[in-house]
Amino acid sequence: MMGQRLSTLRAVRRTWRSAWMEAWAHRAGFWFQILIMLVNDVVWVIFWWLFFRRVGAIRGWDIDQVMILFAVLTTSAGIVLGMFNNVRRIGELASSGGLDAVLALPTPPLAHLLARRIETVNVGDLVFGVLLFFTFGNPTPARFAIFVFGVTCSVLVTGGFLVMAGSLSFFTSRNEAGDLGFHAIMLFSNYPVDIFTGFTRFMLYGVVPAAFVSTVPTKLVDAFDLGWAALLLGVAVFVAMLGWATFTLGLRRYTSGAVWTSA
Image (cartoon, rainbow, N blue to C red):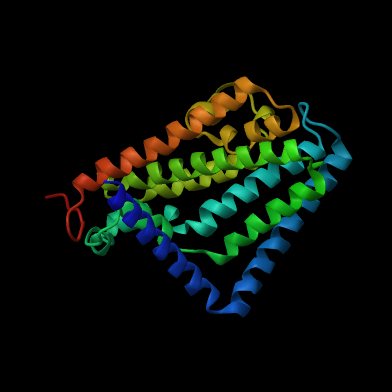
């Protein structure tokens, strides 16, 4: 059993390495796409810097905290969308019958899918996020360790939620849920959840877990709390397992050339 697991891990690692080699094959394009994303992120940060310089703090959030929030968000998004980009395409592949070739491989389908595609432009987010933290995050060994913990949990929440949303296509034959889930969690993660109130705030903690993608990790970096850290880790593991379970159940409904009709 252990030998089989090691063999599976090696196969997934080779797949991921092959995806990196494909991305790196065109070096000029590789660095150009990263540069484009870096410029885009810098413009976004300048906008928020000017905004907070004019209005001051909003509901307890100042420019320093927002910079940490963006550092967490761009780093985790760079990992999920850059290094495991197929997380966005699960719904498309499921609804179009694009998983047939994957099922024939001797590796877990979800692991192979996630490792198979690198999106260079999003890798720029990863680079930017780390640089942003070291520039504005008042880095110390302790704060950096908390930052890494928060980013890891953010990756699990984002990846698990996107897998779950995309996997709904197995049951509906349509990819709207995957697209809607992606735009919802990415949009709301750009803002401190504390600026929302009432039902919207509840939604961002309990339905679309955007609060656990950026807001909660940022609060931990700013003022570490063991209870919130345990909650963040628990939510991250739960959402990741929910994504895996939804994909696994959906795969059982999948048939070769999965094109649904009303018949």
